[in-house]
Each structure stands twice: as structure tokens, then as C-alpha cells.
Amino acid sequence: MPALTSQTTTTAPPASGTPRDIRNFIGGDFVDGVAGFDKIDPVDGAVIGRVHEAGRHEVDRAVAAARAAFDGPWGRMSVGDRATLLRRIADAIERRFDDLVAAEVGDTGKPETLARDLDVARAAMNFRSFADTVASTGLDSFLTELADGRRALNYAIRKPLGVVAIIVPWNLPLLLLTWKLAPALASGNTVVIKPSEETPSSATLLAEILSEAGVPDGVVNVVHGFGEDSAGAFLTGHPGIDGVTFTGETSTGSAIMRAVAPRVRPVSFELGGKNAAVVFADADLDAAIAGLARSTYLNTGQVCLCTERIYVERPIFDEMAAGLAEQARRLRLGRPENPATTTGPLISQAHRAKVLSYFDLAREEGATVLAGGGVPTLGDGLDGGSWIEPTLWSGLDNSNRAVREEVFGPVAAIIPFDTEAEAIALANDTDYGLAAVTWTSDLTRGHRVAQRMRTGMSWVNTWYLRDLRSPFGGMGLSGIGREGGHHSLEFYTEPTNVCVQL
Ligand SMILES: NC(=O)C1=CN([C@@H]2O[C@H](COP(=O)(O)OP(=O)(O)OC[C@H]3O[C@@H](n4cnc5c(N)ncnc54)[C@H](O)[C@@H]3O)[C@@H](O)[C@H]2O)C=CC1
Ligand SMILES: O=C(O)/C=C/C=C(\O)C(=O)O
Image 1 (cartoon, rainbow, N blue to C red):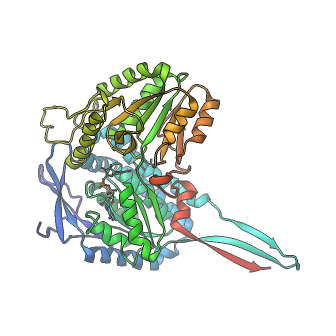
Image 2: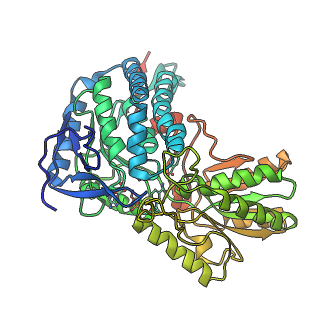
Image 3: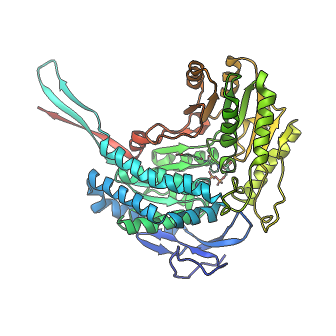
């Protein structure tokens, strides 16, 4: 595609039906790319944006702008002033709430109600939460007493890493970006952000909002493009980057590790999952069915925490399977602006092809399809979109690939078990280790089982109930490190110990 040359700002509203120009944001200016690509609306397949792809030169400029800003007044700003700025950013996000909802819905096709209640609300919350955390989290200090009578004060201070690369996916674009950006800024870093090629809009609008809120030029830069041989790889392989924080697929995490290995840069990775739920016969069945419908189908199953394996104690298996299949059939697929819509499309035709390949695989592996299983016919101009039916399988077990590999769509396999020990073993029989859910009315058992899950997060009788101060992340193939509260600050800073002899 030829280079794009128009000089309009990225977020200026287009004439109706005209694709928006979506530019890079470098050193406080919106900047053209070396090439461009179309942003497709997953609701109906229409082209809604033309994205300026950053080449090596634009990535170099972005990293240089971030370095210059880091070496300037930003690097000397007090913690209190940074916390105040974060709160101002949260206010500014709320002032542009509807614009951010429109950007997020346009790129992802998710229901507007979901974008409002989850994505954009959390963006503001992320900044407020890290303003509180940075203002209130202390560090070690020790009064040291030596055998020879000398005394010393040892205390640690935090220094920002420097220029941090933030690479984010398309499923919760603004939520995940701000979940990384807020603690990075709270800690005094400058950043270069590479949003997903599928969801360039909210990051670009956020850049404008940050400027309006008073974030100095160069502190936050946004470069658009793809991963390999494009902006993503140019950024993670750049010698001027001091750390990389990434959320996305496990194989991409491996590629990023290889990119930073020669310079031994720190990484924070929140990767994939193949999350299990365990339902005991003593659970409140209505609550469990409603909870599992949410954990399987929220955001069309495109949340790293979504449940893809459901283990159910045998006496209640048939009732659970029938109840959950009924919930899947009741979901309302439709236009995002319709308040009755519960479920949007998948992000792209390419992702739908991947999810459908698992629908085929599951059938080949012997699945019984209890709900869904294909592509719906919706009419109303929607059939060019990447819609898919919420689906439930039975008849599979842990030996099947459909039960072992992350699908990242609205689908789960439901499997019976007989004993608590078997349920724990089945849930833990995975190379991933992100999130688990236990449904039981016996809270002693709830604690016991939750603690034995080999995951970074373990919910009991709920799912995706978040406290932003608690550790968030996974083990095994699901990631490296933890985000949330002081855990995030630990990644974005280098502690330095000062020892003063008294
Ligand atoms: N939160 C999660 O766990 C997510 C998982 N996925 C899974 O990943 C699959 C692939 O989706 P993608 O969008 O391709 O995910 P991805 O993990 O490849 O992409 C996430 C981000 O990484 C960037 N990226 C890709 N390759 C890179 C590289 N070599 N160096 C630097 N940056 C790179 C992408 O441009 C994007 O901004 C999906 O089908 C889904 O199964 C996708 C999105 C989120
Ligand atoms: O609530 C959060 O902080 C994050 C939720 C989801 C993901 O991290 C993901 O889907 O990758």
C-alpha cells in the first residue's frame, strides 16, 4: 500500500462512511507511516480506518523521543506530582468516555454496554488505582547494627527502568494498555506503545487525551503496525528499550524474549491460558450456570481468563450441561449499539478461521456439540462480519487437542469427574497456569481446592472479580511476573539500596 500523506489529526471524526486516518504519535505529534493498512469492522466487514504503519525510522524516532523526555524534567518529577497527573488523566478519560467507547466498539465490535462497563471504566480506574499505589507503597529500610558497634541505615529507593515498550493485544485494548501505562508512568518511565494492528483507535485517542491532561511531549508515544518484520519487532529489538511489558499469545512472548535476550532486558508477560472451572455437586447450581456462562462467553470468549474446560461432579453433570447449553443459546448476537446485545463478533475473519478450525477438530476428536458449533446467519447487513455461535462440547477428555490448546473463542468442553483429587488433577493437567474457578457451597473445600490449583489466580464462586492491588498473572506457559498494585511497581522500577554509616 502506498504511504499515507493526509495531515488531519488521527481522531478527527470522518465524514460518514469515510475511513478514519489513524496515525502514529511521536514526541507529541501525529506522524505518518511508511505504509498503511485497513482496519476492518468485525461487525460487518466494512473498512473503517486506514492505519499508518510505522517503519524502523518511526520506531527509532519514538524511542528517541521517549529517551529525551526521560532525560528531561519528567525524570525529575516528584512521586506526588506524578500521582496528581495520573488522577488528572483519569478525569480526562471520563470527559472523553463516549469517544473512547466509540473507538473501542468500532475496532472490536463488542457490545457498547460491555465497552462502557468494563473497558473504558477500567481505564480510568487503572490510573486512579496506581496513583494511590505509588503514593502509598514504601520500600525496605533497616537499622543495621554490626558486631563491632557500628550502625548504619540501609534504605531502598526506586528508580524508573527508563524507556519501556508496551505491546498489547486486541481483546481488551484500552483496559490492557492502561493497566500497563498507568504503573509505568506512576514509576517515572517513558513509553513507546505498540497497540494491536486490529485495534489501533483507542490507543491513538488516548494519546490525544494524555496530551490534553498535561503529559509532556515524548513521555507517551504510539507506533502502529504488525509484529514480525514490523513495528512490534522493530520496537522489542531496539537497543534503546529498557524493558518490555506484553500481553498476548505465548508464542509471541517467546519471540519477544528472543528479541531482548542479547541485551538482557526485563520482561513482564501475561500470556495465554486454558483455564479450568471445577463444579462440585454441592454448588448453587443456578449461580454456577450463570457464572460459567459469563466466564465462557464474556467478550465472545476473548479474555485470557475465560474458562475453556469445565469439570463437573458426575451427579450434576447432565443438569449443568443442559443449563449451560441453554445459556449459550440465549445469548443475543447483534449490533453493538443495541442494548439487548450480549455478544459481539470475533475480532477478525482470521481469528474466526482459527476458532472454526477447533470446532472441526473437536468434532473429529469425537465431541458432541451441545450448543452452537458454527457460523450464525444474522442478516441485517451483518453477514460480512466475523460472527460465530457460542458453543459447548461434551464427549471430550484431557487427551484431546481441543481440550489442551487455547482456542480464545466462545467455547468450552464440559467433562465429568468423580472425586476432588481427580478434579484437581484434571484442572492442573495443562502447560498453562493462568486462572481457575471452583464452584462449591463448602467454603473449606473452596479454599482447599483453590489453593491447590496450579494457577496465578484462583476464584471461588465467582470469576473475574478484580481488586487492582492483588497479584495478576500466570505460571507455566501463561507468563512471567505479576501485575497489580506494588507488583507492577516492582517491574517498572529498579530498587537501589543506599547504605549510610551513622
Ligand atoms: N490476552 C491474550 O491472552 C490474547 C491471546 N491471543 C491469542 O493469540 C492469537 C493470535 O492473536 P494475535 O493478535 O496475533 O496475538 P499476538 O500475541 O501475536 O499479538 C499481540 C500483540 O503483539 C504484537 N506482536 C506480534 N508478534 C510480535 C513480535 N514478534 N514482536 C513484537 N510484537 C509482536 C502484535 O502486533 C500485537 O500488538 C489469537 O488467536 C489468540 O488465540 C490474542 C490476543 C490476546
Ligand atoms: O482485568 C485485567 O486486568 C485483565 C484482564 C484480561 C487479560 O489480561 C487478557 O485477556 O489478556
